[in-house]
Image (cartoon, rainbow, N blue to C red):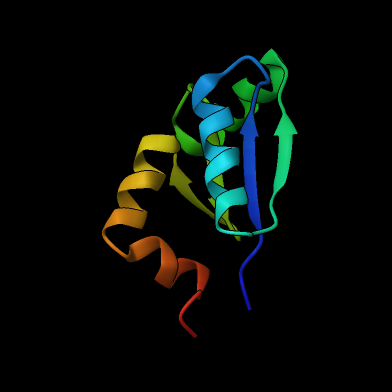
Length: 85
């Protein structure tokens, strides 16, 4: 079973759009949350990162779009998502 994926971002962010399109291309369901400035500040307290998108798999923060892409290219994202189980 694939773990829950959450993407926190904004509509005008090209990296956020890329992340959404990536997960859609894998036919994976995800929750997309369009964040306000206040919500981004709250996320920053949790993750230590003040940029978007912020991507979570289950309760685990995996990073932004470039980190997610890198994890996928290394085969680590598939393991985290349990795509090969």
